[in-house]
Amino acid sequence: QVQLVESGGGLVQAGGSLRLSCEASGSRFSIKAMGWYRQASGKERELVAHVSDSGSPHYGDSAKGRFTASRDNAKNTAYAYLQMNSLKPEDTAVYLCYAEENVGFFHWGQGMQVTVSS
Image (tube, rainbow, N blue to C red; front, side, top):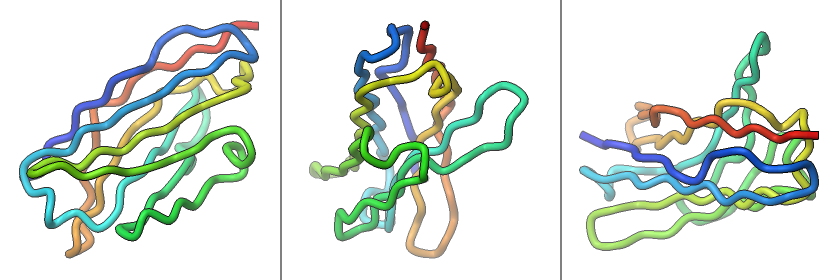
């Protein structure tokens, strides 16, 4: 069973940076991909970044050019990171980490608030 723990969210001023982290433990070798979605109040959930098992990132339109997603592996744990630069108030949302297993099942983190003040 994969369990995800996120960290790094918080309050930042516009133009600032945050680094989100996600730790996936339990069945590291069953994980095919990891990534991030976000959901702003009153809006649909949108893809921020998806990182394949080869480490290749794919970004949603809102993240291109400002965010960098990456992955890393330890003995029994997989990690995903999201470096967010040049943050804008419209980046304010709950950010959720996910891990996709080889069989296609998704696990989700608890979500963390990112608030960008103007």
